[in-house]
Length: 396
Image (cartoon, rainbow, N blue to C red; front, top):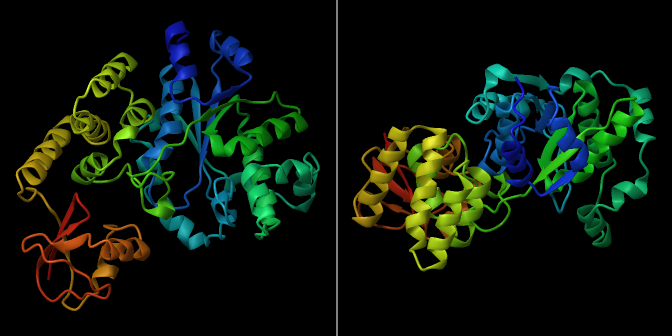
């Protein structure tokens, strides 16, 4: 049964939406009884889905709750090629082994947001791996080189004399062909994906399909103020533990609180407006930020986990104690700390660890002694404080 409630449709068009390409046509479709096919593609370029990617997933969920057919495409093939839409340099090609490793829990993570039992799931290697030069040339003929190089980030790279590989020209064709393969009525994606989303419309026309409508969503800043990106290690991940998720949100810059509430939760807009007014009238931002952290942990874990994470935060950071349930990692004596933390995904990468060391952000949580040696080796049990909010107990 399709829900055509005008209020629901209005919120669908406004919350977490930057632009709609053919809005009038889409509105007419949503007022009808046809079950629409709503497409979202995600490339497993890292092992985690973060809150930035939850924005289109939540929009997919909104369509699902209205009774439409959502289609999640896992870009196992496109991940190999690499999309440079949001990059200021060429994205390296991934190996199939890395993509497979990244994929291990991808669908489970998406299932934190959408109902997988009512979702159509595809891997785009199903059709892209079968295409040959004939099809590729036919699709490429739909576009001109000037279309590609007019894109803002590509133009900047050209002006700066940076390399652009021919491989990068192929990516929009592949994402566009995904829309042809699943006969998408609507595609959702970030503002940085607009060229690729429009490529889907052009290829659908070429293959005599009605072109999909497009909804672009805003991007969000990560914990360091830059765009949220796994490669920068500034993410809040859907599989973060309750304590980590709660603590990360409390480190968020104050100016992003309302944006996060609006884009990464489904708290009622009227309540968010009250939070906004409270902040404007002088309420301590930390109080509203705690509500945001609680809501996100509740959504991705449970009410019980959210209450426990909140209690841990109060006991640890307001009363100066240690959390009750510190994450524990077992290892052998002499293990390099940097390898241990990366292997157990406690830090995003070795470069992230080096950055933390350079900022004096790694210490013995009991003695307060700073760890300043990047090549520090574990010689006994130790409880570490990493950054402002993370703790880990290392046991030999």
